[in-house]
Length: 165
Image (cartoon, rainbow, N blue to C red; front, side, top):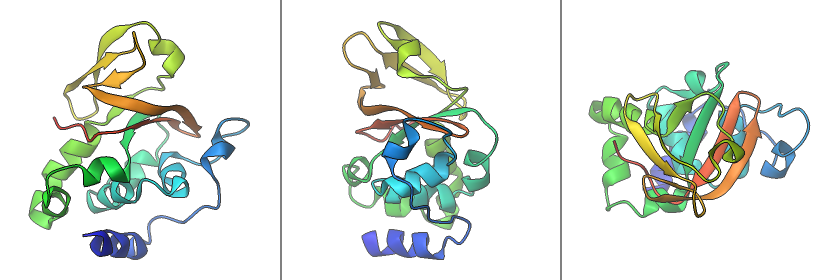
């Protein structure tokens, strides 16, 4: 499966690899968008391949702002065997797009906006995420492991599980 995902990344000529690191996004101009920031991080290869397969690259490179709860490669690897490969099949791209857009909230929501609160947030997919920021931050039970990675068109919060609508 990893070879397939890597080949999707190589074949995905829509994206241009950026030499930026996540550290570059904590200050200054935030010149990279959500997609380029995810690529530069190096720990979102599965997410990036899925975004490419679902045709969501241009959307997530758009003006936004967007808040993305981004599962790591380890989070995707923790899904039942074959789940990612099945979602990447052409006949399942609508389901894949629904899963991915369930991780996106319109607007730029920083961790300071959530601190001490529990709330539901509407996703681009149309569902709702249950966010609990009273003791750490969880989103539908997934832990936010890195918060507030600012980009030119929003913010990424890294999570340790894939959220399913």
